[in-house]
Length: 298
Image (cartoon, rainbow, N blue to C red; front, side, top):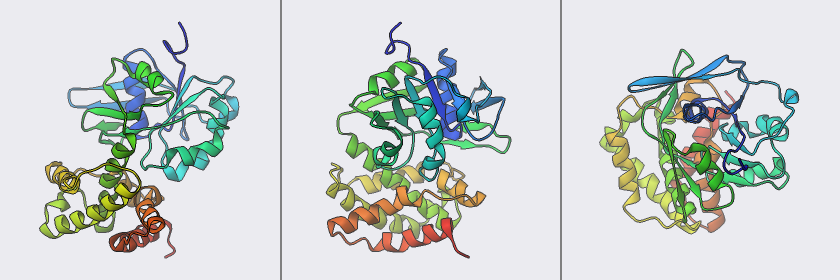
């Protein structure tokens, strides 16, 4: 087979999102080489109706890697890109497609310095998956990715074809990515409250969320996104319809005392707003609090 018909695949970062993708690939006979920090013997994905066990081991030493891959999924957080750099050097060649499964709208800028000109394929991850105390991952909805219509998208489509993770390609990826960013940004309020999705049922939190989302929407439009006035309400309605105990990765990181993705999820709105001359009074309050929660001191 040609590379496009049967790409060799590796995955960096077997957390909640990475485990979901690894399981989706394994189920259709395309088990990836898995790389991470912990030497796990296997990965386990649970979902309504069953589970998938992905055989390991998880590789932990980039210097032991002797081959490069056609496609590398990177499922590390924006706070972990530098830590993942040795894996990128070990697994990638000049033609490797690097598909970044990460929050934010700046994946290409974040990864380009570590790839020597190779293609960086950003994505939007649309599924809720959470790490459980027993180290398994609970997939709480249907898995779906959105990719830009650019180089490399066809390889990801081929790799995930027929799997439990659907993939769609968007001609206007900028709008899709910013819409997801708005959703991620307002989820940051959960960190400040220390509460899960049920908090959005409060009328005062609904009002605050809508005001924050309208601020973010103005910035998104200035950055080239085509999003309607209805988007803030749609996002809040989504939180209203979510299980009350539904969390988010940034809340899980806060509860575990890990660094937060505040810069890529919230700070970007403030930064882009300032560069465009747009006032962002809610961001000016939310961002410093998230930054302090993440980085201290105190």
